[in-house]
Length: 521
Image 1 (cartoon, one colour):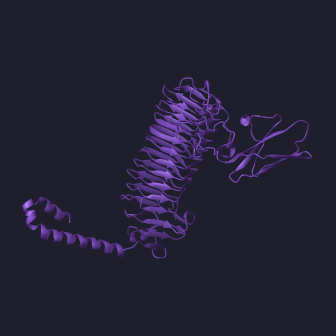
Image 2 (image 1 turned 90 degrees about the vertical axis):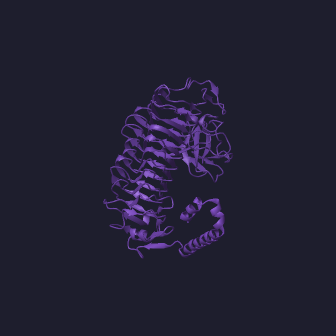
Image 3 (image 1 turned 135 degrees about the vertical axis):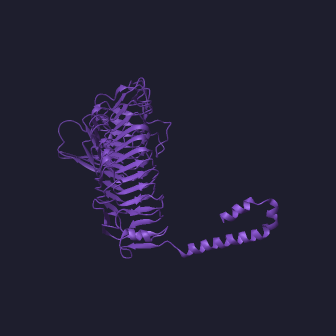
């Protein structure tokens, strides 16, 4: 058809008028014939499900027989050897899925190959779903994407060992990785679990745990800007960036949690060098750096930190929470930075280290909340009150205990009496409960009813507290004092009760006792 159109485009108007009728009839009839043929083929070739191993002995045999739109369904079991590793889609838009989930369907590469290899321009409709991939070796030891952009979902990739990583996405491999777990993978070079280079990868709803890398214990990024959403990073380790490291490019990280990651040098959780990044609604706790940046280290880059909770991280050098080296435009807004160990909660060593620090809560950071240079003028000098009538500096930063529900167990929700509630920037988007933004990663839902009917009774030496239960409450904080109208901001609950009652044992003696019960949601 293209050849006929090309000839037609070269004829003169007179020539066209002389034979247009006969040519048009032929042209239209040919189009109809061709279209009918396509419809016939489509109707005769519905998507098929190919069964491994009952119909095809290996996973690769099933892939080889599949056509676009087909599904290769793999039964429970452990698959090894030729035909069950180095699996190649050959550019096909097919789905290769386990029958009953990753726990029941294992591809064991036995340290002699990788799980899957995408290198023929595959797109999002090339799908890998529901496999455990063990003991991969080679770059992209679990899954290697080289100019291939598959969807990888519901997989577990464990115990891969190589110079690089468990999944590698290189040179335009804009893969989607969703609901996967990366456990105990080792990359001696960059990225223990995932290496991204010149690719726009999306990673969501994933767990990264106990991975090790040279730089980026879980994820290493170079000349790319991936999107990472709703992921958990636990106990990963590296030289730089215990969980995530990037060099040239950037990263957008939203609603993620970073616990117990460590770096030998900079960035216990995240190390950022050269580029622009956004970190929003994330929690950093228990991360450690041997030198600088217990949670985050920024080196000659620009990073926006918004609505994050940075608590109880540590380093042996500067910046127990955040360390900034020769960087520009580092706004820190609506954040909580508290209880970090190191020289300063925030540390800067250049004239423009922090462009904006506003609407935050900075409390109990070793060495001071702000150490070094590059901070806004008059930071931490109390001069105003905020919308909660709490003392603050001219940037609306407060300096009070944030009152988390149970930080020891990782619950960084705010208590009902936290000063961080409604202390955020009123010009930003409201919280989902339609109130002013709260500080930190998690907002407090003010649409939930508060306790109003606390009953107290005495039996011998015990005091019993009882109140009406609330369906949405996770637990209850119990506070006690010997003075009325006491301030719980600086107090630790005497207990956290799971139910709507508590017995204070052997408390009766001389004096008075006052109680406050708050809910945790």
